[in-house]
Image (cartoon, rainbow, N blue to C red; front, top):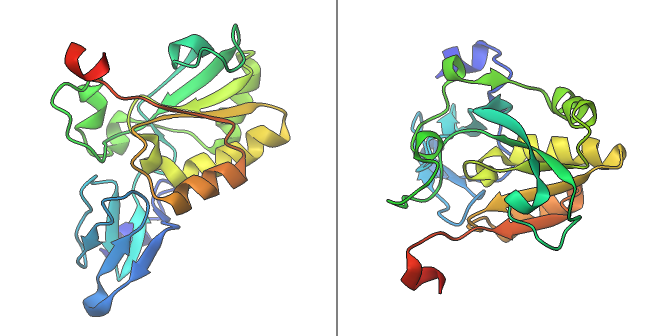
Length: 199
């Protein structure tokens, strides 16, 4: 465990939302699963680990892909129509949907060897470079990138960009408030299923 902490990898950062419990366990408060994680173990999503009795995210800034997309593809139909959002995703999910359209991202743990590390500053610079009007955290469950998203949103808001989230909505109210306070402008709760589910 201490090897991970001592490696000083930029994608390993202390998580913001957790409680310390007895026996050096921690309770993650990022999503509503609220995993109780023993020392050295991972939470359900495999993106958060109990290291030395503290909770860490293992994917701060690890990108599985970046693309400039029309806002309507998010899908947001009444939020800045005709504009573009620079969209980024990472790895894993806090759900187990058997029909997931992004299975290749949502069912895999963070892996620096398969990722591009991107700082919030670099991402916001790319928003400007590609002439997008918004950021969008999407592809996998963005709540698992809470700490990075907060930093991106603050920087993007300062440069006049809008911030969006495409999510399953299974975050804690505290996480949602933090996102809003950091500059979240629009959120799409994206529910998928067969014709019976979406009718």
